[in-house]
Length: 126
Image (cartoon, rainbow, N blue to C red; front, side, top):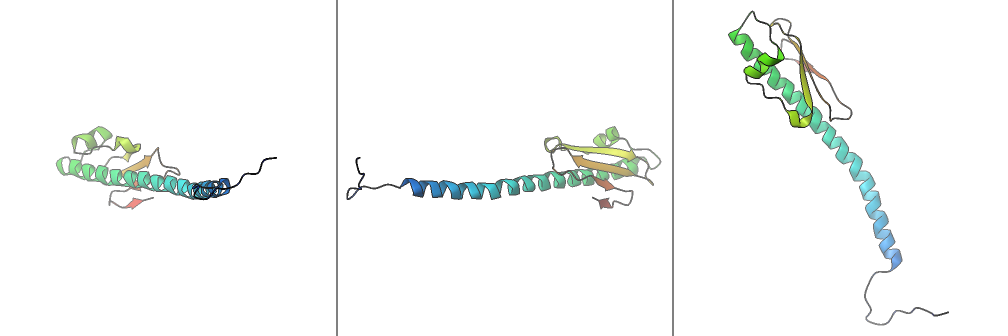
């Protein structure tokens, strides 16, 4: 059998050193990937909440012009609401009267998705 010897001046890493580095990178990736997913979900949920605030503002603008009217999703669009389609946010109008306004927003990309609701007073609840 032939013995392997390291000659003087020869540079490089041993197989054990490379395997340890790969193991450390694997452990760091196992920690980082779930955290990144959680950050993305929080961002999508924040986008849903922001869209709901914008839709509420558009509804108030609609009611300023039509105090006795009933707001629908199309009325929100004409009153200045621009939906955030890139974040998978869906805003629905439940009750569209000024006194009993109820809207909800949820992002289909968030996991877990949080459904936000707003009432006529402008209070947003998760």
